[in-house]
Image (tube, rainbow, N blue to C red; front, side, top):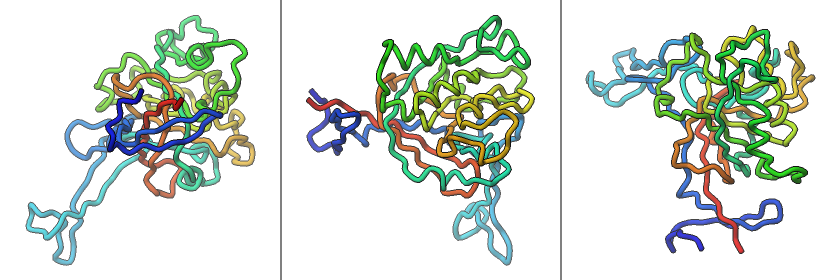
Length: 286
């Protein structure tokens, strides 16, 4: 029995042979906004995003300074200042635009919560880069969350996977990820598992799929995009259609499970752009 109000908009759809109804009005945003003042998120040691009023020729784009309207010039780095979605062009010599890769935006998705495991002695840890205190989002943890039954058939809800890591403090909304104490990251095996499951879109609440300082390997990125280690050639990528969304935030009240994912993307011609992923609740119809 649905608890939706009679007037609430809902949409029926079929996924994997099952009928569902979706409730867009209940969508949960996973985006951390890019802020230009006050406490703001930064990553990789980059300074905060900034804004200044456009001025010139007698015009000033600031109503507090006598201007007729507010017109700001914004300085931001999508990879470092908020939730963003990126494509294989993040790693290739060819300049690939994420807004051309992400042509459709609604996908069946699964949200899972993962407790990172210590890297010390972990079979998936890269001994060349990992410190024993690093936290790993491993393939075995993802398999336990996504594949609870042996011999499970391919799941259409693995088309997109949202990974929430614990602890899940709201401090993530204005964190300063400067690399001094690396946040958790995915192992190369975890990136490969997601690719094997048919996941085309992965969303994480971390600054990067990979360790922030890894000598330039980006092994989890490469495994997910199907790009060989050290290659920068787009022609070598077997999964150039896939996207990675980083620096998201999934509130605790959003339960693990199945959703529709709507990745709303700023139409910027770059390898990465600010984005607003939305998780839309769904219910199975009898």
